[in-house]
Length: 151
Image (tube, rainbow, N blue to C red; front, side):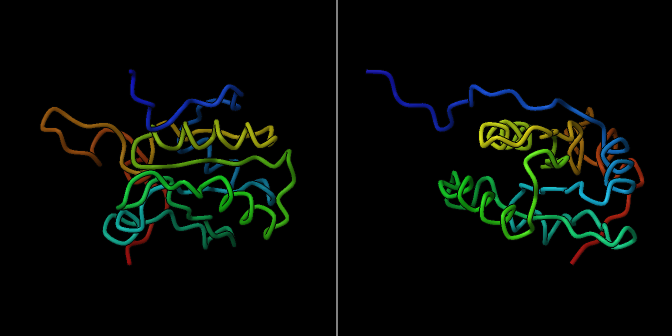
C-alpha cells in the first residue's frame, strides 16, 4: 500500500514566478498588491522579514508549515486573512518563503481558491545555497538589497 504524500499539488495554475525586485516594484506601485510571507515564526524572528513600512504596507505572515509539520489550517487561515483585509480575487498576491518552494505551493493553493494573480517570489527571502551550502549570498530579498528588518 502506497503512503499518502504530505502535500498534494493543487490542480490549478498560479500566475507564475517573479524576482524579488519585480515583486517589490509591483508592491511599491500597486496599492492593492499584497506580500504573503509563508515562512515559519522562527524564520521571521531569527532571519528577518521584508520591511514594507516605506510603502505604507505590512506583509501578511502565515505559516505554511509549523514546527509540528504541515499547517492543516493554512487554507482557512489564508482565506480569513484575505477576507479580513478585503482582498479582491484579482488582487496581485506575492508569496515568499525562504527560497521559493513553499511559496510556490502556497501560491498554487491560493489560485485554487479562485484568486487569479498569485505569484511566487522564486528567489525567496534568503535565496539559493552557494558552494558552501549557505544562503544570503547569491539571490533572495536580502541579497537584492530590498528593505528588511530583524526582530
